[in-house]
Amino acid sequence: MTKKNWLTSAKRILTEARDVPRWGRVWVVSLAIWIGLDVLVQTQNYSWYREKGIAVPWPKFLGDYVDSTFWAFLTPLILLAVSRVPIERRTWRRAVPFHLLAGLAASTLWLPQLQMSRLFLAVYFDDPSLFRELSFAMGFRVAVEGLLLYTQVLAIGHGMHYYREYTARDLSASRLEGQLAQAQLQILRMQLHPHFLFNTLNTISALIHKDVRAADRMLALLGDLLRDSFEKLGAQEVALKQELDFLDRYLEIEQTRFQDRLVVEKEIPPDTLDALVPNLILQPLVENAIRHGIARRAGAGRIELSAWRDNGMLAVRIRDDGPGLPAGATPSTRGGVGLANSQARLEQLYGRNHRFELSNRPGGGFEVVLAFPFRSSP
Image (cartoon, rainbow, N blue to C red; front, top):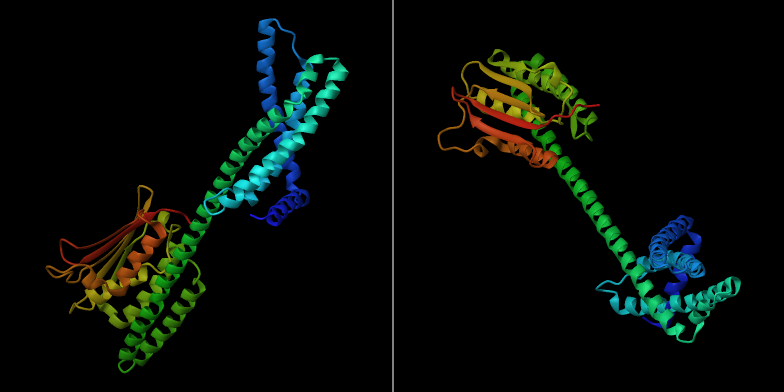
């Protein structure tokens, strides 16, 4: 670090200490800490002198308080120097000489202050013992003590600096993780719009040649669904009641297609309707049940939707009475976009604090059970 760079760093530190209003509060706190520490030390010294029967050297005590005031004034400057020129692995070659010179400068400033205060106290109190502290040897002692005091404040400053750096990095990492999770959730949820739209349009296309009025009704319902979904585009969670309202419109479309072949039964307790659930989580799961369960049946099929509270969790179950998974098959062979997307969104929103279970029913059919923390919507 060149002489010019050292002077620039010192000038910047002094400028910031003068210009930033909050440093006034820092000096007040620094003075309170130094005086408080000195009071503790002098209280112990006072007790020792009284115990030994020695006269208490009040002038010396006052001199120590003056020294504490001096270092209380320097401490914020040292802390500011640490924040601007920290001793780190990549900066130690220039930071160590800078702080060594700064410590010598602080000791040099301390020496005349100490001499003047001791001279005044020696004359004022007529205390010859204080004159002994004004000897020539005192200069070397003050330089050593000054460097030690500077080093102690420097160590405390670096502890504060590293703590601030750690918390800042931790906060930044948390924000980045949150932003990444939000982006991933948006991508996952937006996958469902074209997926649902294409499936519904295919249904309308197949129906338009058979029943124009039914196809027209489906188009109107589709418009309502799309309007509702885009109104909640930025919401990752909605109340269960809102999610069920959206699902009812979707089921009306499907019942127009299947007519009497599709029966839907719901068991939703009133105390669960205000619970927050992932936006657009039920529709792909019910659609999966219709495609792989009801659509493959020759006769009527039934879908059961139920919700309940379970030890601080909200559990939701979707059942169908279709053929279920064939022997040896895994749930991934049936799921497609709907199940995979739903599981990924639950992992993003709740981490490990969720359940997502897929299984065949003992009496035939397939069921999906999901559970996540119960939180009421505002």
